[in-house]
Length: 151
Image (cartoon, rainbow, N blue to C red):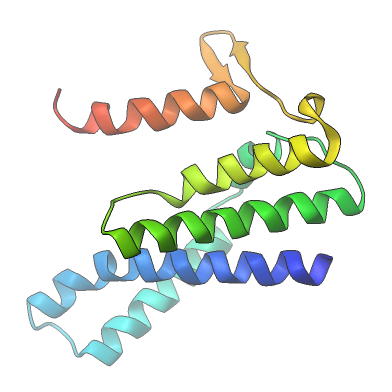
């Protein structure tokens, strides 16, 4: 099961790279500053470095949403990664903008409920003024587009 979870995580990383690499390379290619091969190399290198050096805050937040132990954890994380891949691939096929985070959070919550019940999910509340758990993630998902739109 751990191998399946790792394979699902690699598939998710591939889909995230496919979605992010054009953003990272468009200016390099559009300005004629480099060749497509070099632009892909730069995108690959910096996406790898970002994953290694970028810290673990997002992983800690997502990992803290569910409390599943043993082999159930591998099942839950594999299902979450596969759900995110499905959401990204399906949205891309339909031409609908989306974020892998929607599929990942939904997959984590759904799989944790299926494996250990609703008690395995940190549904949320507040830590001081800050929302936490699934509620905190949902607040962030809803607030971030509106906070950047100038509305």
